[in-house]
Amino acid sequence: MNSRITRRTMLKGLGTAVALPMLESLSFAAPAASTPPRRAAFFYVPNGVNMEAWTPKGEGKLGDLPDILKPLEAFKDSFNVYSGLALDKARANGDGPGDHARAMAAFLTGRQARKTHGADIRAGMSADQHIASVVGEATRFPSIELGIERGGSTGNCDSGYSCAYSHNLSWRGESTPNSKETDPKAVFDRLFGGNDPKELAEARAKRDLYNKSILDFVNEDAKGLNKTLGTADQKKLDEYLSSIREVETRIQKAKQTASAPVAKPKMPAPTGVPKEYADHIRLMGDLMILAFQTDLTRVATFPFANEGSNRPYKFIDVPEGHHDLSHHGSDAKKLEKIKKINTFHTEQLAYIVGKMKGIKESNGTTLLDNSMLIYGSGNGDGNRHNHDELPLLLIGKGGNSIETGKHVVFPKKSDTPLMNLFLAIFERMGAPTKSFGDSTGVMKI
Image 1: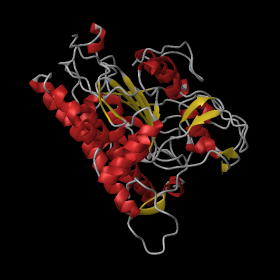
Image 2 (image 1 turned 90 degrees about the vertical axis):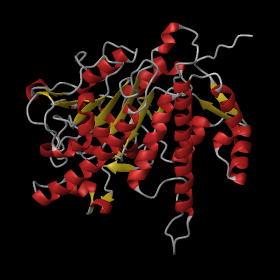
Image 3 (image 1 turned 180 degrees about the vertical axis):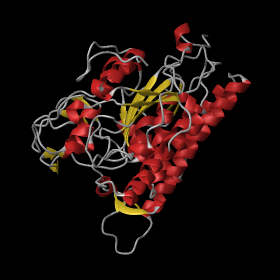
């Protein structure tokens, strides 16, 4: 009997299929499989940032980080700050106001959004979907689209622009946005449920009835596999299964919290969504990491909020709405509050980056080493609504193909398109193309 275990090994049981992380003890069908795959994720924050508190001093090797980037201090050698990149198609270009809608619509497409709030929306295929169209067949899910704030794709959300532009980061085609999933329970079930809808429903009902974890159904399979692994891989498998258990427990706690009775509720509480904003972001980040770790997907998008979001941040002593504050008029107090919001976002990013750096892969590298995370906004300064000098980070080494730890400054007069950076990412993801959006050439990174 052939005792070899393939890379696609999964633990199965009662409508459940739990994909495994890279384990060195496993035999692979081909030598190339021992090299971890590369992943790409695109994070978005709305309303621009306080650029003075974002931009490092000087070019070259990163020194002291500015306030907003200080939460990433421990990972300074694993990311680059790019200053001076432009998003021309987020500018009006004759279409008048609507910078928020255009900023998000153009961030991954490099295309001018058609100004309409009707059904005739048009932007373009987004960078994540270009990658997914080439490498997506290698994984169960070509891409995953995560988010925190829900939002419809109809109606007028910004000066005559459809809400589709402000609420969606990923676009499958020029008229087809990919809706994001904001419920971590739904994401978990999608990632780790079986393929038979009827069987999945029965499994979920049984789990809920007996308050069992999804891992209880694959426990015997895991015990059998554990006997075939080396000591290091036994520890890795145990840590991985524990991380799934932890995520599922947090989802269940969030569900219980959301379902708790509230006096005269204005609307039914959502199920499975953590009450606290930071917990929500981190839980969704954990799910993305699990999907990358198990090679269920290699491409993800994750906006921390919709463009133009006016969410208040009372928990960091910022009761005003984010969008309202972004029109700061150079008021020092408002700029300080914007900095607080921006720093809160990078703190959540640092949590995700830290988790990825802590996950070892089969060749001695980490999950972060083999990933490329884009983090930024389609607006520069929220008050100016400018779309040059964008706040932009590239985190991760792309399979040790990127020199990190630098601040790279592009001359303002060059108006270097953001899409040039994406062309470089495409090459490293095995999805090269000569042009994308308003690109003018492949950026050297």
